[in-house]
Image (cartoon, rainbow, N blue to C red):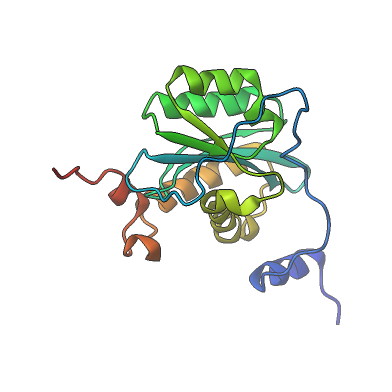
Length: 205
């Protein structure tokens, strides 16, 4: 019995299997850039806009890759902004950060030590907004665990179930998913509320 490649890919996704192959490296550090200390050891997000996390992942197309950056409020798991790019150049990260800062300013903003997040343009943008910058220890993905969990949800609930033919397809699919993730998908850790319900909950005295 013969089986085609798409069927194999579909069955592997359904079973949570993946081939062992390197994806694009999104976290290379530039040696000349300043690295900030990790501020979140023994710190727990206690309210919306307390701690934001930012990260970059890759989105596979039928031919090629896109890069996705997103900023997550750690308390509510609410995705404040996201951007797609067909390259790892800095502007799409700055655009995402500016979009977030136009909405809210966190106490602490956490990232890895990738070259985007240690670049002077990025760190100066956050410092000018009065943000405390926190950076994970090298090789410690768990320091940014909430954003890593977001990527798992995005990929297993959307990306791996869809074969994006074009960047437009990816943008439309991710736009639908993030609306669902923020406004409709309940989280057990949030008492089965949605991220939007928790992020926008009225502040009590």
